[in-house]
Length: 587
Image 1 (cartoon, rainbow, N blue to C red):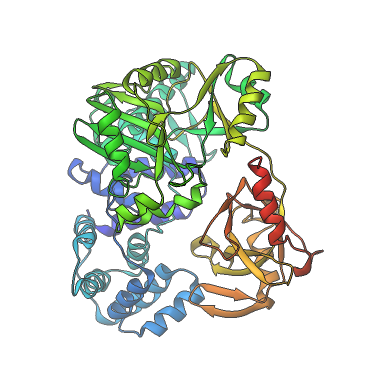
Image 2 (cartoon, rainbow, N blue to C red; image 1 turned 60 degrees about the vertical axis):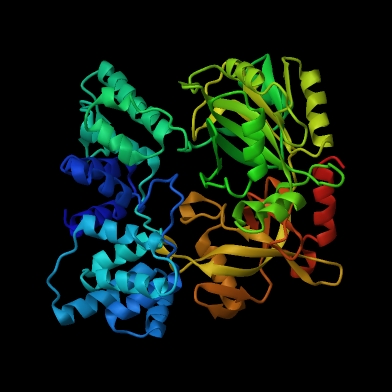
């Protein structure tokens, strides 16, 4: 398949915001993709070279991409960077420069999608002396044969910023439309799908569910598409695979313990909500593999967890859902997530970090046990199985999550207060009959946490946006102040702002125009400001963080409003941040 055929699909997808139209475009294209090229095409449509769970990355920075564009176009790196800044999209800059060069040289060779795919897949294996130059030359060679639009999407692919609006649900439905004959008709004029009758709608929902269930188990739409091409029976043969992570099930939020119980049903299972990080642990006899919530393989970073699972889990094979919680090795007191987060990234000095920042594994769910999937098994039964295979829990090593089964609001409230007093974030409320839905934010599992006030913080830095946010400032660094007026950064925020005025609320355009006069320095996409604009931010909680000057970070911050009635002197103080941090944990 010519790479230009794939690029034409990118362009059609990019030209519409209608989900059903995108689905139609994808399905029409996928029908004609040869089986031998399906894996390549599905991955490239997602802007990927490897499945989501594959730990390999291209390792291609924007700086290297600029070099490759410069080599391919014959321009200087300064010219490329200048045009990138002007366009707000390095892919667009590459399109303009490479397209101009190709017109001048009349290069005739056309790019092949499979050749592009294999060439880019080789990048992670390029290591050692001279590897950087080799990567730049390899990409420059592809760009040298690319048309203007091909160059744009090549750059976006290597930088993992494809941005053509293919959501997971869109690709799922497109696979169904393309291969499973759902007996529907897409009405482009109405932008809707039409069914022959009500039974047709039910049949369609069944087919979509079959595609979703297959994806839930393998986490790879390329595998799903190949199976779907053979029919529903092949889809239903896809199962969990040890060593291949699945997306964790996510909880919704409720404002109170009583609301949480009412949501999931009484009696319910209540668990401590720990201030750690998710771990999905796969055990296959003597082999133990650990993945994070983002599906990153962190087995090497946590040898004590590997040892604990090998020693204390009475199962040949299993997939566990857990929370790793840090604790002070001297006092035994639990520590916040930010204290141990550095262990996720570090792949050296492991023994030293293990001694300084140990973790306790709290096991709370079971997805697979000794050859049997448990996704469709009720939570109460999954928990019973956990108690059987983890018979000798070891405090500060590996144990079951603290759990209370009750339908009493009074008992639940006491449990909630106990959890907060122990330094946890709150509690989880789970339906006893709930099934495990990978990647879903389900209603039969909710979290209850203290509701915190907003903060008024000043913007001190930001980045110029790319793609559809080109020309706008995004990713705002915000700060609080101490009693002397010195500013201390406390995090970054980009959520809460709107792209269109009609959506209501504060827009990126509005904040950009307010900040333009305050710009004092620019380097690439990074911008620094004279601190003046105050934003009101909401957030889920405050955490300790060495990443910011304040020593704290806001978890899941979002912009609520622009406080043009506030000056820098009126923003939240560092002391207020400290007090709020202590109060949220009931200390």
